[in-house]
Image (tube, rainbow, N blue to C red; front, top):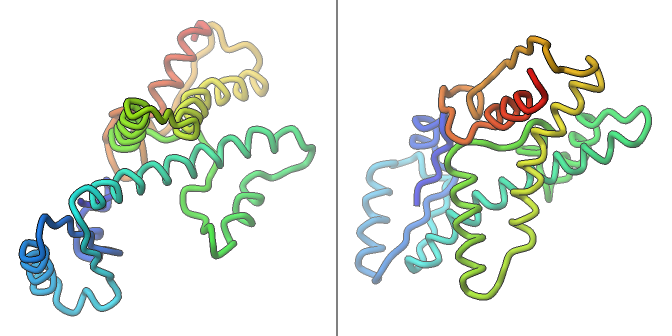
Length: 201
């Protein structure tokens, strides 16, 4: 599987943090490993190469995106109830949480929720697959619900600060699903616009 983050494809290709090889036999895995070692040369010094069967390699990719999505929804859920505590600076709280070496701060910023084609697609795929096998994932269901509700919460905050939004002009800054890209697929801004329209903006 590939692990390129959109907007960072060149950097992620040149300097991977790991290479996962799904092999259907020892020979095919060895050939791929030899290719990567030749292609990257010294760049692979600190880059582990993991070889495993095809099914395990596929789940590495899904597990990666499901965990990152979970971190984003966790940050938003925690931020939403942290707002109930007077004088709390949520960004400082999440910074403190993220400094724990077991956690790290990446993807722990409260905001409008995740977007893009990969996270939604992969979380929904694993959720549907596990349900088809008789194991409905309550965690992934919650991750998606929290993410979808975050747009409503953002508009609620806007109304708290500016009063009723009906009839007002609203500007959204940053429509793409993440900085450094123009990709609007599953962008959180679409959910915000939908909610604003429901409220007469």
